[in-house]
Image 1 (tube, rainbow, N blue to C red):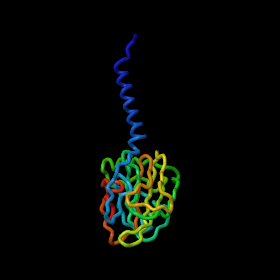
Image 2: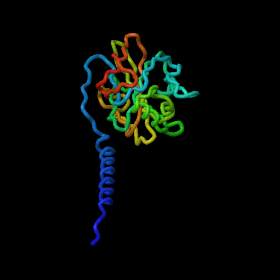
Image 3: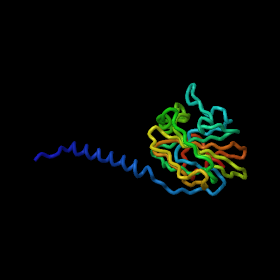
Image 4: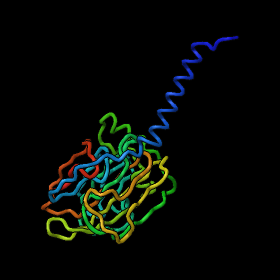
Length: 234
């Protein structure tokens, strides 16, 4: 009776480890939902785990970022609607290894949820992933997905520092995304740090706030943040 060569056994074992590791990551570890300590102070928290890729203060029609020569993005290109008054924009890139549950940056009521299809198809987020991985700012360079890819825009109306505030949370899908989920319908109330949705596989989440003089930004590009726990603005 012939014996199986040792090299074949090793190859089969290695393949089984790789396949098993992928299946565990894809169907178990990816959906992990660790508990978070929600700050009780008056603040805006991160809606996503990941790396801050831009922090911008802009007027509604101003270019937020220049992605590459001849390609730029304004706030209206990100939220896919015309917005009034100066805005604060914070972008967070979520790698495939980050927790992908998204949490509300502030307490309030969900006024509107709008889904936008890609223009014309989702692009790979590889350039941004590589730049965040190797810490090569500007992290948004060559990342046309910011203005092209499928997205879901959730508008939350709440109170911040005694004034009514509308916050946009923009979930931007990656090329291989298998869905953008909303767990809360329009008209529902949401608490700061509460899970309201999820993007399956690598993606990006932006926060758009009305710019006010009493806001103090607490993050900068390249910084790692945790959903519901890291303070973006206070």
